[in-house]
Structure formats: C-alpha cells, structure tokens
Length: 578
Image (cartoon, rainbow, N blue to C red; front, side, top):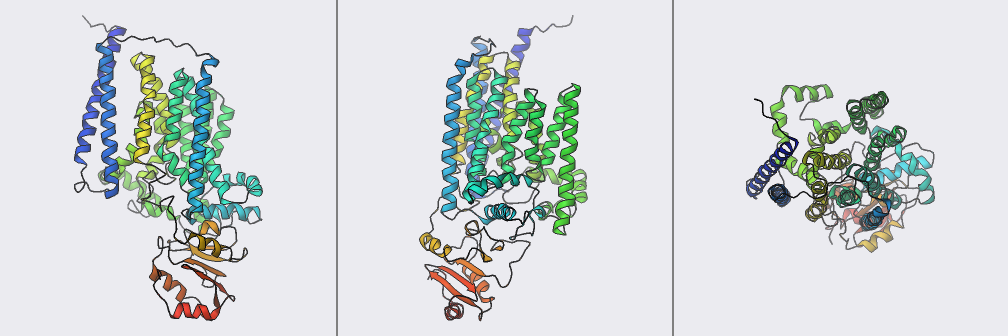
C-alpha cells in the first residue's frame, strides 16, 4: 500500500532536509576557511586571503546557526503564531521612520566620504573627470564631446542618461554634484526594496532589515565612493521596476527600465533578462507581451551599441573586448571557446578570487538570494560579464562593475524569504532569519569597509603632504587652456575642451604641445619620477615656461611663464622628492 505523506509530515521533512543542507554547507565553509591559509592558495592576492578566510568563517557560523535553529525549532515543538494578517498602517510608522533615518544617515556618511575623497585629491580622472567633461561639453553645445580617451563619449560607453543631469549641472557646475546625485540615487533604492519586502513578507520589520542590509552593503558603498558612473543609477531603477511589476503597474515598470537601458551599453542584456523572466513567469497575455517587448528591446539596444555604434565611432573594436582576449580575438571566437572548451573556462571560474567575489555578493544577505533563484538569474548577464573578464577590478566589489548584479541579489533575497516562509510553514521563522541579515551585513561591512579599504585605488581619506600647494597651483591654470595632468588632478581640471591624462594607458595620446602641463612631483601614485622626467624632456624647451613651482608642484605653460626657469628645471633635473 502506498505511503500517504500528510501535510504535517511533509512539513517536517522540509524542516529536517533544510537543516541537513545548511549544516553540510556550514561544515564545508568552515573546512574551506581552515584551508585558506596564507601561502597555500593560488589565484588570489595576499591581501585578499584574510577577507576570504573571514567570509568563509562567518558563512560557516551563520549556516550552522541557521541549521541548529531549525532543528531546535522542530524538536522543541515551537509553533508560534503564523497569522498572515496585514499590519495596520499605524504599526508601520516606526519602521518607516527608521527607514527614513537610515537613508539620511547613509546619504550623510557616504556623501561625506565621496566629497572628502575628491577634495583630498583621491578621486580619479578615470572616471570622474571624464564624466564631468562630457556633461560640461554637452552643456556648451559639444554633444558628448570628450578628450582624455575618445573624441565622443559614445565611442566609449552608451550613456545618454547623463543628459538628465544637465539641468542640475546648470545650477551647480561641479563634480561634487555628480557625486551627490550618485549617493542620493543609490540610497533611494532602499525605498522600493522596502515596499517590495513589505508586500511579500507582510511585516514591516523584516522589510526594514532587508532595506538596512542594502544600505550597509559594501558593494553599494564602494560604488558610491569610486568617482561617478551613471550606470550606478540602474541599481535603484531595476529595484523600482521589479517592485512596480510585482504590484502589476507595468507602465511604471517600463519607465524605470528606461534608466538602465540608457545607462550603459551592456545593461540592455540585463533588461532583456528582466523581460524574459516576466514572460516566462507570468502567464497573463498582458505580462507576456510586456516581457517579450522588453526582452527584444534590451537585446537590440545592447547588440546595436556594443557591436555597431561603439566600434563605428572608435573606428575599431572596443577596448573592453581586450579583457576577454583569453577566450578569443572576436565575439564569435569567444562564444565558441565557451562552448568548445568548458573545462578551461571552469578552471578559470574556479579560482579563489571568484569564490571571494561570490561570497562578498551573497553573504551580506545571508545567502537568501539563492532561495530566490529565478530572480537571482536576472543577475546572470552581469555576473558572466564580470567573472569572465581578465581585469583587475571587474570581478571585485571595489569598483562600479557590480551594478547589474546588486539589484537582483536583493530582489532574490526578498523572494527567497517569501519562499522560505511557504516552505517551512512558519512566518515567525522566516522573519527571524530576515532580521538576521543585519548582523551579517555589519560583519561584511567590517571586512570590506569603503571608508578604509584602499587596495585597488588610493586610500579614500589619505592626505597629500603638499595639498595646500596643489590648491594654489590649480588657481594658476587658465580656464580655457588645454591641460595635460595625471589621474589624481584631472577631476579638478575637467571643465575645459582639452583635458589629457598621462600615466594611465589610454587609446588617445595627449598632444605634444598642450597649453599647460600640471604635475605634482611628490605624487607618484600613477607615475614615478623617471616618467615625469621623460615627459618634461620631450616638451619644446624653447616654448615652455614655468608659471608655478613650489612644494613639488610644477605648472608650465606654452608661450608663457619663465622659459629660463623651465630650461633650468629640465636641464638640471633633481630627484622628485627634493
């Protein structure tokens, strides 16, 4: 006779199976943490090893705690209230007030960090100066004109969303405006995330916990810290689009999807994934049409901009493709390598630095995003683009490349919590797990802290010993002069037609006779002393003159300043630190 599994027995199987899986994964994570000792892990930088060990240990402890909690709840017979009534609006007020305070605190903290980083000359030309120059040029009638790397910014990235910044830039023409827009825009993503979680979890407190984890998320902080990238605004836009989709407001969802579509050329693939998800998951004709339209639009826009517009304007392939050169010389060859050599691809993806990357993305939400796997798959295009790239910053959380991943990690975490409640049949348990993401987010922030971490870029709050001289030297540069400078000073000289950056490999070489050369000899973060000497030596010694020289700052101008001082400077070169 066939065994009949009652609902209670089925629920018990769910509890025990989930606990067993969690405890097994906890043991594996703790074992991996013990193995990740310095000196016996290849494929990872030494400074990343402590992070890997710490995140593995926290992962193991969290998974073990969750598994033991499930077993305890089952064997001790806890059956707390499982009512699903909608909380009254008055009961939501404390959570909403706390959410507002958290958003304000986030904006204040990260706004201060971004501005201080810029004012201390730790922001960079790639990309703050590049983006501001594009906005400034467009405002002055030169549509998306650029000079550091390409003649027109569309030859580098497809980002027409920057046109929306021009009205604000008219009122506040400063790179600080771009930094504040980025911080405020990203912080605002907590609002639709809270709305989505409140609707799905039917309680304000786990919804607030998810929103708090978003505001504490290290990858969000690093994105806000690292200059300005318009694609960062796609993070709140994707969350808002999904929240609108969840509430069946397809028109509003469409408006939000325009933001990522116009933010960067590769984000059309994420928009296409969003549309495909909607078409496959929702069976109503209206939603299927919505999904298919956006899947098609996303594919067309990304394909047209990446494989036609950008190469046509550059008169050659995008330099981004060089990051995938290990797969082949052309997109076709790269695709064939992925298909024909899965072993080699998997060996690359199995490197420890990729594992660290995944832990940094998933641990701050307690791996709940894995329970929302259909929604997490929306991050697949962005994740594939990142982990397949051979670029020092792309498969890491310290730059802007996590943009197409972050929104779907949090959307999937919310849906994962919702499914966990259905799976275990206990609303209180899913809420307790949801609240636990706050300490996990805090621990992740302690390991990867945007206020202190300085491995990939200059430390954000480092002070230059000659900062006062830098400010005085900047005042000597004419506003309409073309300037050659290094990466750290370009953001302070971006409002001009001709800005060129040396010390960083770029497709476009600076002109041999710029109007002004602005160099801080004491600053050797991007160029060393011998490289400075070589650059000054190739300038026309009869035409340039020194207009400022003090505390390592050297400003020379073509047909201006003291030619005698310039000759003495070049012909009697001394150590840069002297």
